[in-house]
Image (cartoon, rainbow, N blue to C red; front, side, top):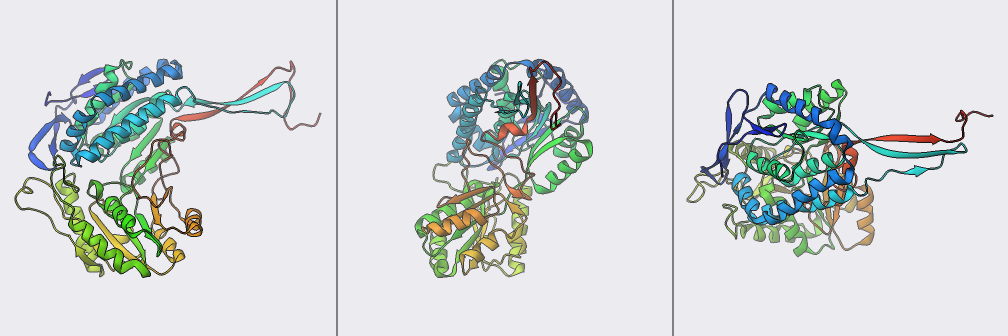
Length: 494
């Protein structure tokens, strides 16, 4: 595979105007270089937006099922190349092969699902209040879209944005995370392979400050879809509000798993360990708070520590590894700082909390899985998204107290409750302020046919996946056809 990669603008692979590049490294082995990529800036972004705008009129007029067919064909190629791409993903962003295979599979599933929406793309008909008049709604593309994605799901999340944007009739400029440029390049190559017209999907690599910011601000962008940190998302929202752009934000979470006295503790412990430490806690749905009722707290803690002690840390290419490296050294240091914050606040580290540097770990970003006890709801480690292999146990006396603790953060993405009580189940469903709620299932594990997104500071009300994904990239158009042969005046007494 070529180690020097380019942007994709107007159907051509081009270098950044400056000639500067970025390097993609394996987070488990910094000696493993996956390639160099353009360090793009505002002029590169401008060319990509210009190409997307030029392609928009013809793409908007392309029949929806034909637009969707390109997405379907990409999904079929992903099926054929699943293992190859999973292995590349493990090398580029670190997570285990089991997880990278699932990432590619989620992309496959979403391509198939969204291709089906191209045959649906439903509007509504409704009665008119006047005779000889027909009323309906239809969807209209939102325009040229900026798609800005994170590194932790480098196939699935880009396709959550690219697939509905294209099906809806938008053209797009895709700016992937600088930590996972290779997977983004390959994904765009697949759309080129299936014959997507030039300019419909453009790719611009680069840092957020140098490429992402000018993309959001460019006057040729009509809609921005951003997944990332709340800090950056707030800036995106402010810029879009000032410039009158539509924007969709998914900004992370501080997710909780509630364990009730009647819970199946074996299931709850496995869900807690999987939810907290899959992808080394680098998921927006990771379980960073364990809210455990008093009756089972001691036993739950004992079993959890036993389970965590069995979790091997290492390269995601090793079949028995459960915790792979963190994405980069900066994120590793951030997580270690939060461990220090937690101990200063009075939480107790029951296990973990250290960097791994011995044989096999010297060329990567490895941390031990970390479990805090005596975590209280007001602590920073209970309020702020850490995005690493760190979780903590918070005590609760009652269901209502557990729900209040779960709801006590500025985030509202994913929450789980383990209970056999049908009453507690429905109280939790009604009272939890989260966009995704699981009963007797972990906080992680989105399915493509369900809307994904959160309440409060997690986002701005939009949902990705499910049929609701179409709302991100379309405007609703109300249409009325009057065939009465005269001017009829609505709400006027005649």
